[in-house]
Image 1 (tube, rainbow, N blue to C red):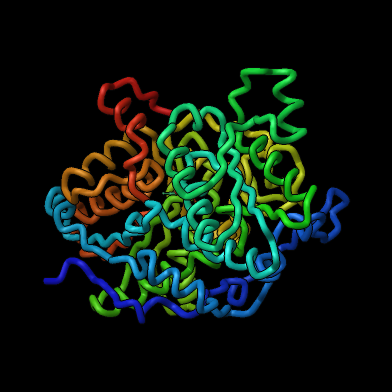
Image 2: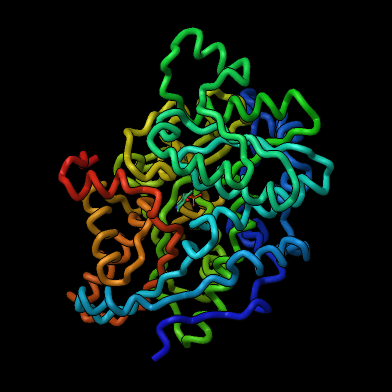
Amino acid sequence: MNNKIELSSDDVPSKWYNINADLPVELPMPQNSEGKDQIGNLPKIFCKECLDQEFSTERYIKIPNEVRQLYQRLGRPTPLCRAVGLEEKLNTPAKIYYKREDSSPTGSHKLNSAIAQAYYAKKEGVERLTTETGAGQWGTALSLASSLMDLECTVYMVRVSFDQKPFRKTIMQLYDGKVYASPSMQTEVGKKILEETPDHPGSLGIAISEAVEEALADDKVKYTLGSVLNHVVLHQTVIGQEIQTQLEIAEEEPDTMVACVGGGSNFGGSLFPFLREKIKGNSDCEFLAAEPSACPTLSEGEYRYDFGDNMGFTPLLKMFTLGHDFVAPSVHAGGLRYHGMNSQISLLTKEGYITPRTAHQNEVFKAGKLFAQTEGVIPAPETCHALKVAIDEAQKCKQTGEEKTIVVNFSGHGLMDFKGYESYLNGTMENS
Ligand SMILES: *Cc1c(COP(=O)(O)O)cnc(C)c1O
């Protein structure tokens, strides 16, 4: 039996899949506070091509050759592995497959969109990219992508993470990224906050505001986002298209597919090609979105218009939200603490195509430890949420005797997250 399905470079998809073409109801447009359709100052902030992709209804969008070649050089296609050790340990009749996005050089799926965004920026004459980073994975991916495209890159890293994860900063600096603890003295927003509160711990909302301020001030500077927006999820659909090819080779049909959701990019990227079949009525597959109990956006949020950032800089987006002023408790999965959700995933959840599941922090790390012990790979805390939900499903199969095929997107490795694992092991982790 072949437990690792690998593809060749030629199998890297040549187009991205755009679910806007297949949604069961039309996607609501962004609005201003008067309830009028508008995209506000987005054209000043983002690259033109990315904004066009954001609202495109073309089913497939060609991946530029240069981007596809970089995918091939930097880890794509990624393997699909069968978690035989985990299955045996659980003594389940279910089959569990996991897609290894951790095998990217930056350790997570984030590079799939970073390369595309840096490519379009370069083509449009941009000289510098700015962004924010919480846990550090996006800042790392964008620093590398900028270096490959010969662009400058400025990363505003939330101060608490900056202090907690000094090695993340070193990696970004190796890729020539300029990293500032946010709030910083680089921007007016940052200076004002530091004047009032010199030891401010920072937040994603503040870091976004600093990065956006720079893009608004200079035509040669653009802002990039690593999740939430449709074009980011679009770029991630190389993952799901590869999984389709790999499952065909394995002669498997998925019964249950799982991914964790922060802003939705690894979930949408790995599952949208399969959701398309469900929308068309060709599939009974169940799609499970794993989120922390401490930030249950899809499970307990409201489906309504809300701002994408804490300050209210962005247009209003129709999505599941906990409120733009929601402050998530400090769960270790930094990538899953966002108050909102990608609008396509929100719509498909509202329409009943996606089922959200929540998990508590301790049981999530327990799942991660079990996975590490049986498969050898140490998952990122975000990824542990998806594994926890997949393990629960496999355990249900043990009860019912069903031989389900479960596929999990393994979004990233946890080799930079030892603070979290340490507190789990020594029992000091809060069970939020
Ligand atoms: C950023 C990140 C996430 C969460 O972001 P999504 O856009 O929801 O995918 C999950 N896992 C890893 C490893 C990440 O780096």
